[in-house]
Image (cartoon, rainbow over all chains, first blue to last red; front, side, top):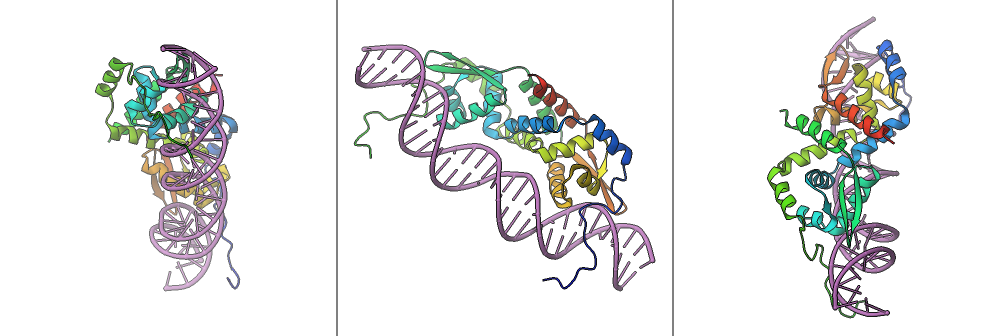
Length: 124
Length: 124
DNA sequence: ATAATATATGAACATATATTCATATATTTG
DNA sequence: CAAATATATGAATATATGTTCATATATTAT
């Protein structure tokens, strides 16, 4: 296609890393690569309105699956799939009670994350 | 396939909302529907390892686009696209400096969210 | 044991989204 | 103004993900 390029566009600056010191500091203090992936995965659990609603509900009270479905206007299946993801992220826990499985928040992290998030969202 | 179903499976409990009081309380205190969507959107910004890396870098120091690309091993284009998303979420801000655009965190929320997230991830 | 109820799950489908490629825009330099 | 540099962006593609449908598993009641 192109006859012959005079210049080759590079992906990086001609003078890369103008902020050498900052970059150095970055590498020193950086969490392990794996931790950053875990972090992203954690926030993925919050990154869907269905799961947000479920978490919000559970922050008010524990609920069984079908009550959640009913309260949130979701199908039982959809709720169940999402509960599995939330449990994998260790944000919720469950216990059996007769035929029902009762879900609740695993710890206080969820509420804290919510508070921070709302704080940000509500700031114009 | 099925000759004729005797029972119709419903999506909800036979006795829905066993936790009536909790459900009531839920509806009273609930953030507006829209706020929950905004919350989910906010966390979507954190829900990708590329953006997490970018945010982490910016929590150490401000950077121009190509330095970010260089430091994180991403293309200039990919970084630029993600920076746009992060800016839309009001997590970062930018200013021009000659040919470069310098990006930095918009406020302290990001660092706080990071701390909470890491806390959760690091708890076995 | 059989029926009813509650929950979980695999497969299929539709949608969302992250990256790449090519190129446009904006600023500085010669 | 032309060339070089830095950044932004639209289109295409590949992948990830949320929901639905059908059905499996588990518990309780008769």
